Length: 305
Image (tube, rainbow, N blue to C red; front, side, top):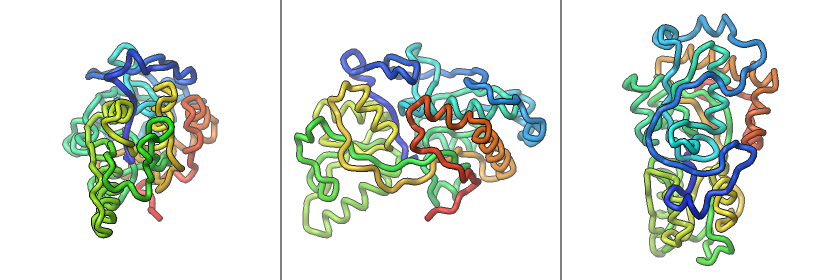
């Protein structure tokens, strides 16, 4: 992913505000699974040609098991019941799978364990705001469906005086396993040390909600996260946080499949094209206020600029 995720679990009682377009009025955390038909029924229902391209395991089960880090609002997070996984990614992938005539079973997982889970067969697919990059495409087949960039977030008014181009010596929160943690901050730290300046103090957590809470509390001076959850963080904390500067390094999100599942990946591309053509794709993104990340060049293992 760029990844990343959702919001202040530790401070739900004081920070959760309604996201009226998203149909949930609080944040939650914890384990659990959910299994449900597609949230939006695409025009025309299942496509027999796509159904025929399902991997045998999924076809026999009549469902697809999805690994996801359900702490990344508005893309994937737990509803108020603490069990049901909802969000933009969830509704869109449910609609994709409706084209194949199968249900989805969403299984919350640590973000950095999802690709391994797909490789081992624990999950049939990983859907968790994964940014497509070369390293991940060496481990898995990825199908692009959206795009997002990295966004800096600080307390309102930027009281710590964070300069994204010179954050040396500051404390920056980030989610474990994301491109922000593995690529962005290491490069920034090298620039700091090469210039003889103190390193950025990187505060890493596996749960994006806790990263967000660390900025709210002042434990971290800022955080790096994908733009959709950054916007949600501002909304859901009542404006106690704010975006700093503009997003950058935009890149596609990708569904994660086993390396050998390229044919299934091509079928998913076709399903996405059908959803774009019938308006479902735009409708879902607009509902979750993420339409700015819409793409039309869905692809298996897309070429990166």
